[in-house]
Amino acid sequence: MNLASWLMRTAQVSGDQPALFHGTDQIANYAKLANMVQSCAAWLQDNGVSAGDHIGIFMKNTPEYLVVFYGIWAAGAVAVPINGKLHPKEADWILGNAEAKFVFCCDGLGAALSEIECCVPVFVPALGDFKDGRSFHIVDRHSDDLAWLFYTSGTTGRPKGVMITHGMIRQMALGYFADVDNVTAQDTALYAAPMSHGAGLYNIMHMRVGARHVVPKSGGFEEGEIFELARHFDNVHMFAAPTMVKRITQIAKKNGETGAGIRTIVYAGGPMYLADIIEAVDHFGPIFVQVYGQGECPMGITALSRDEVCDRIHPNWKERLKSVGRTQSTVEVQIGDENGNILPIGEIGEIMVRGDLVMPGYWKNPEASEKTLRNGWLQTGDMGAMDQDGYVTMHDRSKDMIISGGTNIYPREVEEVLMTHPDVIEASVVGRPNAEWGEDVVAFVVGDVSTDALDDLCLSQIARFKRPKDYVFLDQLPKNNYGKVLKTVLRESFK
Image (cartoon, rainbow, N blue to C red; front, side, top):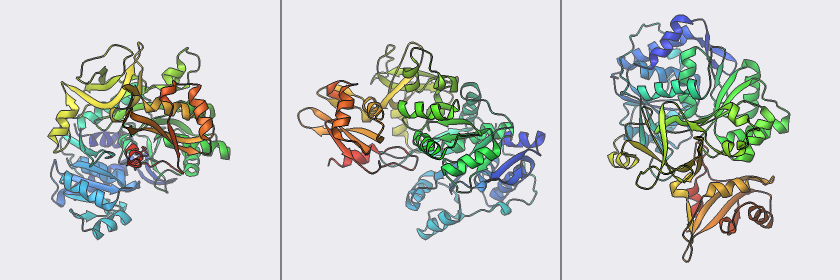
């Protein structure tokens, strides 16, 4: 089944339902949106696009994004969304690796690609380009046909193209209804995070039920604008990285905002520290849900429900809140050793996943596929443990674990302690080479706080050998375009 059919079905029964907004301005109802998507698909076919061709989308968040996205699907092609914050040369490399036929861009990014003589033709669409009223029969697609070629953030080298199929996205959407949140036609999807990533992937379940889709006029994450749009539309759902949750909480407390109109914030994409989520829930109330996933198993490994995020009664509520939740319905999750053998409950190992939501492999990269997909399991590269109730607590990426004096130290544990200090804004812990001990623990900290205060804090809560040997104070931590801290950059400072 071609996923574009979900939009067409919604348009058949709810054509008058408001669909697409730019800020508070309505662009289209579902009937008009479906017509624009059909017109885009017909344009693609007229320009030589066939089923299975790869089409790039190098755009910031704009109303045109959803039109071309579904137009690509309707034509039977594969969308290759590229984060609009990437350098044009990075985008050009992705387009070449993906063997894209051409790329849709917004004005500024299209000009930037043209200046570097992009490897594929560049087309800058406007909503007015797709309104000729042409009918179009959606191209048939099977569950194992590619729908989305997702390029990883590339924190350790060139990004890899994750092959995401129509069947995988359908599984993700149905799992969302079962394990994450319900969605109705009265809801509003607000795209404040990049639509090239999880925020855009989450459009599908909102499209299925006829919810409203709102692209902020800023095209991104502006706290004041988010609060205003939430009050205007009500029942707002949005995806946010943990750093965004922390920021929106700080601004809300500073400016007296209550978050009125926000129904659900799904957070994922990096470590959410216990102190931060407790503060967010205390201020906003029961609006938060956590998911854990990867491009290789999109948004669908585990989930922590809003009731679990808000629970303050269960004897283990803090430990559960530190976790990433329990296994979602469409997959199996186990903890394995370095050989993929399943470990006993409570032991730390690599988080492994299998099921229909797991990717078939990386695009044009059989070596990486073979390394990541072993014995039917996706090796996530994330270290974690599962308790007797099925809650998975993530410790770190396997490559981030510190080994000092033969003992494993998980940076996340140290970071959690540092983040409890009221004057610490951000903290990231990495290992520094040590000829005698293997590695030293070093903490990079953003905040106005003394080394002695942090030492005393760590010694009061964790073993002495886990305490950072050094603290490096920065104005901000280096991050990639998805808000993830670049520990590789921090380690490079030791060279």
